[in-house]
Image 1 (spheres, rainbow, N blue to C red):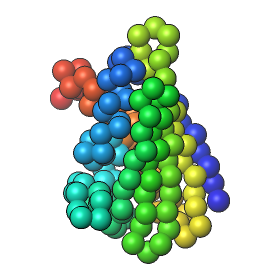
Image 2: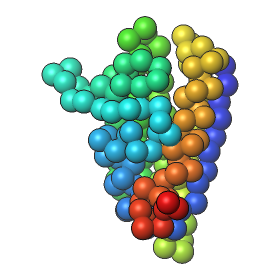
Image 3: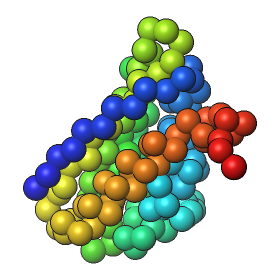
Image 4: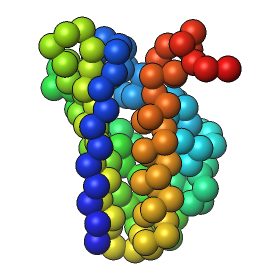
Length: 135
C-alpha cells in the first residue's frame, strides 16, 4: 500500500480555492480527466470515472479548511482523499492532499487515480483564473 502527499501553492485567496474544491459539482474540473461527470441520485452523488462508477461524498469544514473526499467503487473498495486548504500568509492559498492506496484498489488503478489527481491539481490555477489559461 502506498501513500503520496501533494502540496500546491496558489495565487488565489484561500476562500476561492476552498469553495471551488468543496463544491462536489466541480469535481470533473479538478480531477485531471479521471471524473467525467457527477450526478445526484436518490442515494447521493455518483461520479462517472475512468475507474468506473464511484459513490462520492464530501465532509467539509470551511473554518478549518478541511475537505474529506470519500470515493466508494461499486466493486467494494473505498478511499478518502483528505484535502486541506490554508492561507499562505500572503493572500494566496496552500492546498495539501493525501492519496493512500487502500485494500482492493489495484496498483494500476491507484496510479491512474494519483496521476489524475496530480494533473487536476496542477491545472487548478487555470480553473480559478480562466483568463490566465494558455490557449
